[in-house]
Length: 558
Image 1 (cartoon, rainbow, N blue to C red):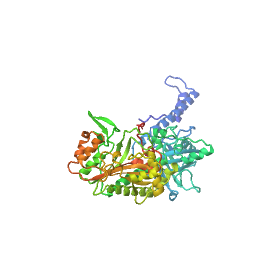
Image 2 (image 1 turned 45 degrees about the vertical axis):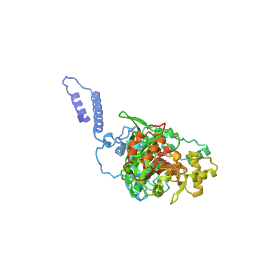
Image 3 (image 1 turned 135 degrees about the vertical axis):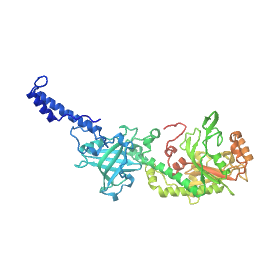
Image 4 (image 1 turned 180 degrees about the vertical axis):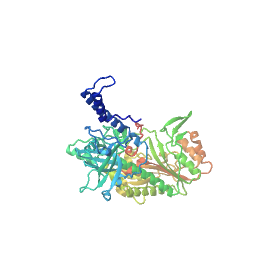
């Protein structure tokens, strides 16, 4: 409801004079001083009404508070956007420009961007700088007092913003004579309008600049005695929403996206079909006790350790070749740099015509295509990661190296490394073998085949010439295992025998075993962890860096 208009001050003066010269209803005379007081009151009342009316009108922005009572004629060019104007109130039709697209070719063009105020630097009462970030890109925005666009109040408003506040900036592109340090875009925006969409809290858990420091910076600081803030891993993960904003993390998860994309596209081109298997199962999918148990409507159940049994059943369902991208759950108490309790599994299963090396061939061509794609199309992301976490580019061969388990063991023995006979390789042995292979064959990526049967899952097919060995393989990057694969047992009687030997209650996997009684082709496959591929390709030292919101034995939030 609009407030009633107040009487004009001049009309109040005339009324007062009239009353002073004549008689009021009560016959009382009004003094001249009283008339002046009434006039001042009326004037104040009118100003108050005008302010109230201005507040009641819909506005695109609320101007920053001024220390002076004098109104800022440029107040509409800046301020905090009213809540109602960001509630999908209307569509303006304005054109928004991505920060990463800002370039010298756009000189003198007007642009509108939205981003986070990463750096706020006052220079004087008449000048200030803002560095606005949008994903991996940053641009410097300049505010200089001018008669037609920027007032001192606007500069003060800009410098009062808290870091990481979301802002809209309108301005004109300019190209400085000198290179701009600290921003990705080598242009500036001469600000004409500045609005705050959402203010961040004044005191952040940590500064983005501190979290983005490289190991090289820390080493230099140690040499010079400079004290730099190092943001620890737990702090980063506790406030992951902030940690994800740093350029290296933006790059890591863009790389991860590309790994998954290449995985899908390559397999689709090879006539594979994407599937989705259940994650709630009645028994353990790989044997052992490392499963997350739960109650399923009164029945004991667990979260799937892998889609292994179901992708095999799909092959029996005559799909020929399948793959899956989905969550995998492991309840092992593994407090290492490369283990998680939940990760994204990239799984493949396919018919075998003659030899399980047909599966190895898919691994070979898939990962060579993946590495080629990342190197060709993700150079910006790899450079960003390398700035904060320096690493050597991955060495790999056009045709992936294959060695047998025994050949690998022999290389280790010749290097003086003791290995348990027919035992699995521990982390130290894997690292050492990776170094030996890299030195001898000039590759960080290779396949190790023909593992001992005793260290493989129950469904692994034994070798034809020696049942102590199996038709299986592992794949390594930089001396760490990323893939386990094998030919599967497709004969129900042999499968039952192997399950019992491995201590698995066959009643819990009866539907799986029965699926092979109706005619099953020879088949094999493999599984790989998405986060581990990214970690090792990018030379990261901890898998938590390549997991969006990691789940390990000690972390369930955020």
